[in-house]
Length: 204
Image 1: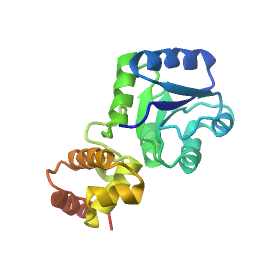
Image 2: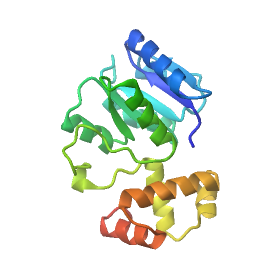
Image 3: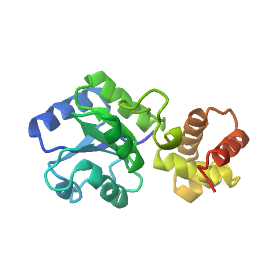
Image 4: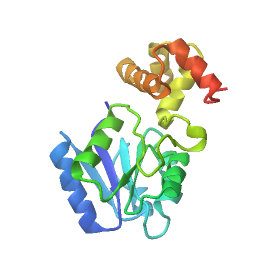
């Protein structure tokens, strides 16, 4: 389970305030930092946010352009794109650039909390706004960057303990990622996952 440290990046103070209240009501021991721009977000005093909720429409660099910057600064963080406009093109672009999820600002609070809860548990969140069965390029399973790393090491034959040591994760966290990967690939064993991943070109 990812720690409840969330960085909220949105240039509308009222929206940030409302979302912060929603998060505080639904997540125990929540720690939130706010920023009105990407530049401000990258200077946040928060140490290693687990999730970055990133608005697309920002002054200066927009959210889509900023995904790479956020992931470079906090490689372990999951990026959740927030947008008032949900189009297949934007959703696909966000996911291709490394977002873990895409959330509409019009979604009810319960749905936003559910997406965050799933991500914190290491589960894959299928994005809204894409046609049914379309998970992006070639309809690949939507793995988070961390799950892709776990899959790669799993395919090299490493145990959960060794994967945890390589990625500096607890064995329990690795186990959760492995289960999420198996679910995403729709297989029931590590060997099947390796076979499916190679068939789909997810690993070399």
